[in-house]
Length: 340
Image 1 (cartoon, rainbow, N blue to C red):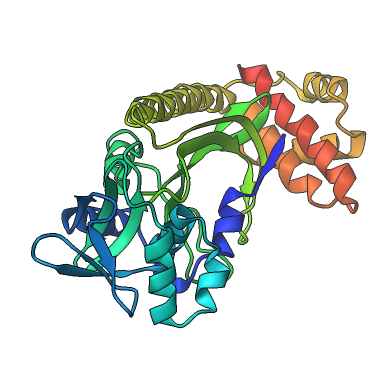
Image 2 (spheres, helix red, strand yellow):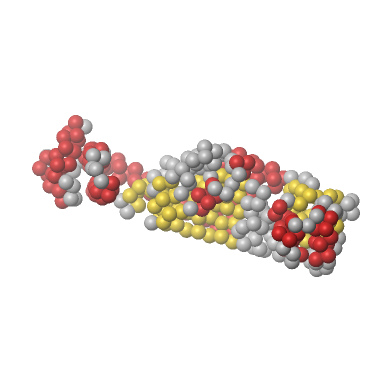
């Protein structure tokens, strides 16, 4: 089984203003960003950098300020180190960029929000809005929620900043049995409207999530990602398919698990103490534990599989060493297979 750290890494690189308390809050934020943003296509050489590094473009001389990411992209297009430009005065820096940026070629794509340039791309870049991705998630995984709040008391696993989006969602009611152990479904999804990262998803089944948002003992881990090229929207179809598959498997496994539990609550492990003792001994349950478990089960009125598993689970907590307790709990959990 795998240990997944994507959400853990996001937790420690995000500032408080990038964290969102709920999926709806994150989705509304992304929709507003889309509503108030637009692409402005400008031919190389048709925009001017003022002495304070403001972009002046268009027939009306509109002015746009650069953010750190769009400034980095301009430096890359100019073939000049960002660190070098940052050492210059704004006047000298703007002159250096003007002289090194391409003066001809295909038009450039400026993503603007209000009077700010969020990103600059060439003609081959195709944008996928965060809101489009979250609409798919909302439609096909509406009952998934963020995990418990992280150790800082604020971060929920839902983030959107200047450069990208990341969401960590699970189904806390989706516990089901896989190979005799309990797992619940979850997934990470990510995107960038400004070219900072690809669009992608990672689905999985997990056993435990700590307050550092590390996912422990994950199985059936599947990942997909795609770059923002001409057919990037095809990624939404694949993400939709992966989420639908996860939800379908969740429902099938949860129904199967519920049926097993219902049967375990009524089916007896034996007609008398001798029969029950023989079955439990064959499953390698310690003799003293068998005696105490049967006494507890009798208090519930019958030697049902569920009553005995419940009693054994309570008694296993007395085991001193964690390794021995884990091995014992695994044997006890296997008893539920007798009701399958």
